Length: 369
Image 1 (cartoon, rainbow, N blue to C red):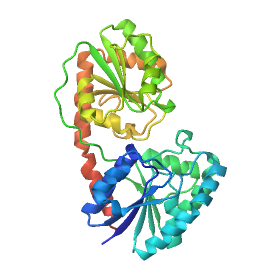
Image 2: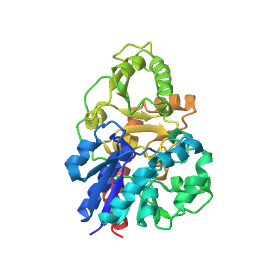
Image 3: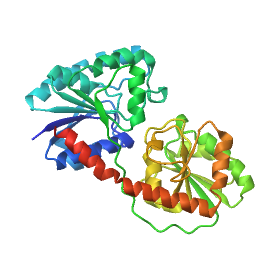
Image 4: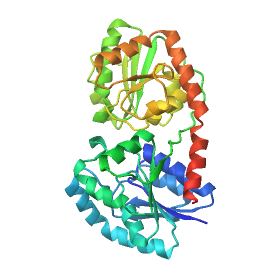
């Protein structure tokens, strides 16, 4: 029986952490014994409770460590700060017969250090591209080249183009493979009846999400098509919700800003078009989930989903810097036949890909090697 120690980069429940929970479930189903390490300093935002339910609180360790990124000096200081935790983990792994350390996200560098010290296998799940949006700086190349030189390390990429980007950025071949992320199963719900055409955005309001462009574009669209409304869902608190609501002169029934919701099935059933205008994404699950739910999707070209979906067949891809392009795309989607065609084909392609079974089979094989 394999024994695997997972290392999380935060205590939240965002995309990477949810994928890690799925990976842990795959490991358990394959008969592996599982433990998880969480950062001691991070306030719990749902991950600890989810893990307690899935593996038991006694299988969760808390240690003082931080994530890499934002330049060479900071990453060197993080490595120094993490050393006591790495030494502790390496001894703990040897004492508990751990076969594999599994690090979640490219910025989680504690695991590779502890695995080298213990002389055991390391799996490194890269969710991010080498881009400044995710803390990457070219000055960090040397550190990552040395980390990836460990001969018992293997990287799991979430897209072919992402793997190519990392190899090009570091100038080295990287031992690893591509496994596309699993997706949440969205219950099929009847579309909510409403007047007009409702456009939706689901996600955070951080700068790279480009929500300001969406708001500006919608205001132009609304002048042309008055029977339209915009739902922006994902504000982290009431203050952020009010701040974004105040950014538009349109009344609240036309532009509605709401807090993050866990009931995404209801959100997808309530909208006609999902828009994702981000300046950078990797494999945005919100777009895939919306297509699975049968929603017409207009999304950024700055992601890796073009590996899996075809423009103007499954969805519309628009450059996040092309303001007029977003208006044109949304104008096209004012036509009911166009919306229905894109929604139907996007859903068909998503269901045919069978993401979750593929992920389970590929990840199970890798974990059990």
